[in-house]
Amino acid sequence: MAHESRNCSSEFQEMLLPPVFGIEFCVGFLGNIFALVLLLTKERQNWHTGVVFSCNLIISDLLYVLTLPLLITYYSNDKNWTFGVAACKIERFLFTCNLHASIVFILCISVNRYIAIVHPLFTHSHVRPKHAKITSVLVWVIVAIISSPVLYYASTQPTEGKNTTHCVSAIKEAEIERSHFNYRLSLTVLGFLIPLVLTFASYIGVIRVVFKSATITPQEKRKVALLVGSVCTLYALSFIPYHILQTYHYSLKKRTCLQYDAYQISKGLATLNMCIHPLLYMAVFDSIRVVCCRKSSET
Image (cartoon, rainbow, N blue to C red; front, side, top):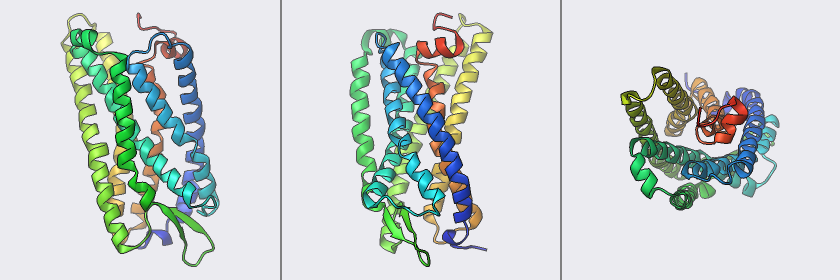
């Protein structure tokens, strides 16, 4: 039987998200600050293209992780937003920016790694850190542009029958909800689906080259396969459920409790990407491998 989501899921949402966001705030903040400190102190003489893209990924994560205390307070306080309309819009905008900046910078890191392995001579002769910096600026501009409609759609809305105010992605009016769904669908295709395909294609290309190489030992090939498989699995776990369930959620007029609860779980998984990005940096920063694994790129 279908129910309006607001009638059946608040308790589950308020029970699940505050502890999840709290853990992700601690892990994401400390992990990314640790990576940023190492980047600025240990990698300052080695700013190759991978480090430039990783630095931008760290900045994106930190911009969003600093808004998580607002959400923790919001969901802990019976979903009552007390920070005003502007803070609601900024939080929704930063979430959208972080999500899609993360996806695109992971794509940049993946393509950069693919080019370096598959076309090493081209990389050595033509790819420079300045190209990564220019690309990063373009990524931020594009992500900010495609995320800017959120500033229009997001707002606060009083709840029916309760003395509380929600921070919502779109006001519940038929015309706004319809245009908001079209925007979300376009954002999913342009900001997630296309980068997803290109990222996975890059990793498949890396795997093919590594496994065809006669100079790489079977043990090293297994390690590469494990690393790539782990990154792809974590990437898929963090981003795919959220985008599928979000699109399905906004396409429905009425939502079952089960569907809405699954969507709430996917929100926690989407934010999880801030916690797993430091694992990506181990493949880019020699200093992180030295600190965490006592290994350098030469081993």
